Image (tube, rainbow, N blue to C red; front, side):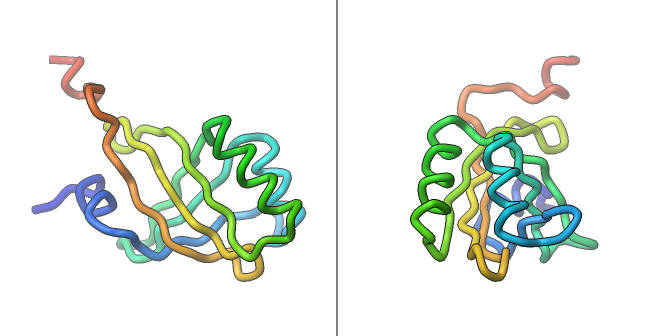
Amino acid sequence: MLTLVDRLCAAWSPVTAVLRPEPNRENLRQCVERGYVHVKFTETAGGTELGVRLDDESKRTALRELEDNGQTISLRGYLKLDGVPVYCAAKIDVNAFTGFGQLERVEGAESDTANKR
């Protein structure tokens, strides 16, 4: 049986940008400026919401795309899911706040579980 990490690494999947208190372009911009965006993978059981800490290049690129009134922004950042270090990449439509995302295992990094053995 595939783990959640395996499943989200296997292919690009539908995502939404989770913006509070409401989804709008200004709240998205503020999240990108802070360098932390919540992305929800919608096709998992109940959905899987991940907090993604954007890398510096992704933050600069996304802010530039927002300033240029682009229709999509590209996000990339690091997190751990179930103790596994991964990068999350997502392309988000800034009008619908939906798009596609995928995880990628961080090469050479060991999981927390492996470190505890």
